[in-house]
Length: 313
Image (tube, rainbow, N blue to C red):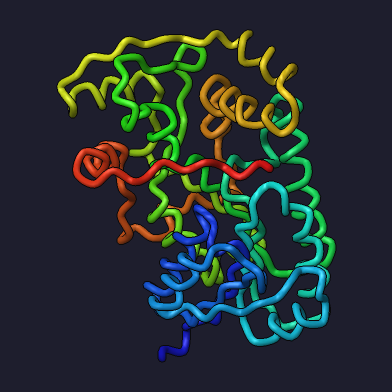
């Protein structure tokens, strides 16, 4: 075992993006722990992660003493808890303060850079909960890295192009001309584990903005048409209709449409310049290659990733 290997504890490791984090941690040679509820229904994915070398530790976030004892056994904590559990991370913060040994904490961000966007109210309320976690970490002087991974590439290719539906129509949100960042989930996993143990990223915001992964909806559709040899009808949903849906749909169904508005109409992942204090992930590791959107679409042609649903309830 190399001296630079860190013991990694991952909360939410059986979830959609969490499983990519666990697999990346194992691939990079870190002793990897997955926090799981004793009565978890995710037995299949837990068994899979165990077979790959993950160590499953059982507990509940309300058991403060057990949580502290688990934290004392590891070096780095990554939380990938879904929306309903965002504020539960305050319990992790409290336990980290008591444990006193954690070298880095990455809270459950991994989307838009939440301190720089002002989206529609349902999404804003969601992001405000995440900001509360960031401020609590800063106030507690816990070493952190805040990650803005932007859009999960396979998730949104599935969502935007609907390749499994075999329809001739593709929905376009707004004009389809806003630029968005789509990063392949496997890359997000690897880069996250790299920045989690990198001294250069301590107490910094890291943004995943590789140049080859910026694309508009219209460009994505055209690229897919060339690869499939098909022609699709573009059905536009006006911005005003999306705004109305965000106001009329019940909570939490109003959150996804608000995210679509922010990312694919307002361009929230690309509409700000990186400052001197920002770190762009691809510049840290020039030898690590990002999967381009063109390459991601090739994956969809050969071995398409399964579609997934975001957990908002």
